[in-house]
Length: 155
Image (cartoon, rainbow, N blue to C red; front, side, top):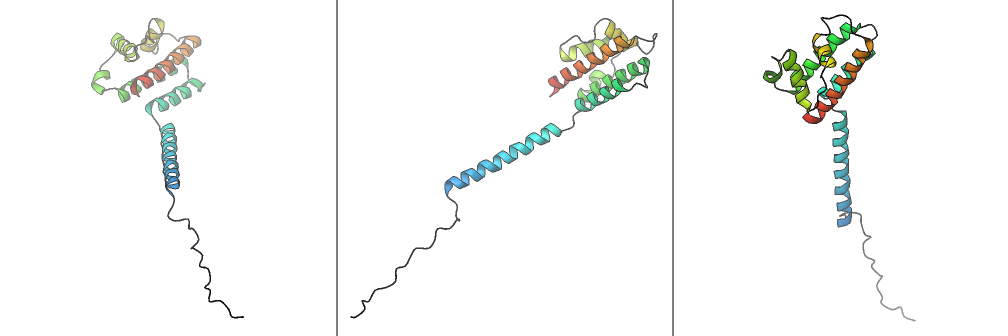
């Protein structure tokens, strides 16, 4: 018998992974976008803001048992002034004293945090008799609330 003149079967080249199909390009773009959003959110959360620094300083003053009540009041007064001058225009804050300063503090957040005895304590506490520890603790809480509120209005 005579062999037939047949040729070998030529198989097509195997399908490669490159170039990618359109669905894979979409998935890759989505993955890059999600990584970018994640990086942005992490950086935003870790960002150091004046409010975060002020809250840390307030916590340090509050937990420092070596400070007397008068020294805590002095540190609070300085802290509140520094935060105000950092967040607001210097011309708006720097010249304020007494009732003008308390009015500015109350109007800056739209809430009357420093009215009555707490306002007087913040203004004159370092110059008067030693205040009670409970009143200083209440002022610390009020200052924390003001810092949180001013942080919301600023950012």
